[in-house]
Structure formats: C-alpha cells, structure tokens
Length: 265
Image 1: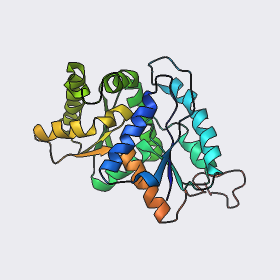
Image 2 (image 1 turned 90 degrees about the vertical axis):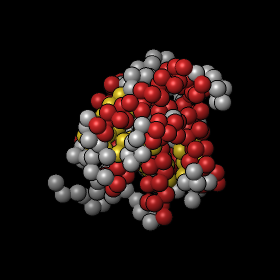
Image 3 (image 1 turned 30 degrees about the horizontal axis):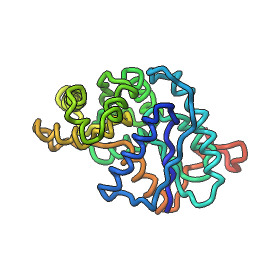
Image 4 (image 1 turned 120 degrees about the horizontal axis):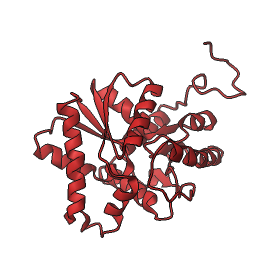
C-alpha cells in the first residue's frame, strides 16, 4: 500500500511542508504507518503572503489540490490520497475527479469522533477557520454530532513561527509556546465543561503538532477520559481502511458526466 500525503499548498516559508513531515513522523513513531507506506508531495505553490485563513484563502488553494489530484489519479503505485488541510480544500471536486480514494482531514476526524462518542468539538486556529468547519460539518451531514467549534486565536503563520523559528528541542521552553499550548488545553477543557463534548478534534495542522503536549495538559488537568483526535491520524486511518477493503467513493454521491448510472433525487 502506498498513500500520497498531499499538503494543502506549498508556501515560501516552508512551514506547511515542515508540519506535514513532522505529523507523519509522529504517526510513524506511534506505529500507525511505516515510512514505506507513504510519500509526501511538495504541494502546489501559492504566492499568498497574508496570514488570513478564510474562504478566500480556501478558494485560492483549491485549484492546486485539483491539479495535484488529477496528476496522481493517473499515476501508478498510489493507492489513496490524504490531504491534511483542515479547511478541506477542493473536497468535493477532488472526490469527483479522483480515480483512487481521497480522504479529507476534517471529514475523516468527524467520522472517527462519531464512531467513538455522541458529542464532539473541533478546536481550530482562527474564527474564519471555525466558521468553515461548521459549514463543512453541515455539508457532511455530521453537524448533529458537532456541538461546538472553538478557536485559539492564532493564525497558522503564527503557529508556524512557534514551531520552526526555534530549534525543536527548545520550542516548548519558550514562554509564548507554553502560553499557546495552555490556550489549546483551555479550549479543549471548555468544550467538555461548557459544551458537554465527549471528544475533541485538533484541526489546524500546527495545532496537531502539539498533540502530545495538549494530551499531557488535559491529563494533568483531570481530563484523561476525553478522547483527543488528530485529523491527520484519522485521515490516514480512513485511507488505509478503504484501500484494505478494496472500496472506492460512491460514484452516485460524486457523479461525473460519464457516470452511467444516474442518481435518483
């Protein structure tokens, strides 16, 4: 089995690729996937210097995802595609055009949360990202399980600086990084105490890099029973399961012009 990990975009500062590599190394360390089972694409370059992560940004990166999915759908040796972007860029067109399973990060994590509990919450980086997560959950038909989407108030660029402007061994000693992790833990705890969530999804990619530290913070605060779900982990698990079951997207759910059997509405 070979899974393509497709970053949502390629940036000049290199943060997205660094996050993608670190997240996959974490999954390797936990035994979820081996180095031989995946390959990471460099992502489609986008010249976006703004720190905003909103609907306009999503529209700008979606075309690159579509081009990459078209490319790899025709390539040999790739069994599935996983996009770790929490904003689900090009989710619908990617599934429509892909000839192999395409797994989105938020979509996969919401399904995992629905398997494990009754009420989940998503923690995002910024408010616009949180709004998009709510919209996507409704589109996926999983908004009945989603009780809240919270955000920590840090852009992906800010979080990238915390992670990669310091040596890895020093990052968690920095006061601003400790403050950020404390904020993430507090939002997770609020999702449980105020929203009555039984599981929490870490959504924005750099937030997922902090997964172990957030888990530790929740355990120390007495929330060791709360399920913490990393979106990339969920998407990889879903991709492997679908490939092993030798299944594919339901073509009637994502029809193309050449689909023979037409869906009845």
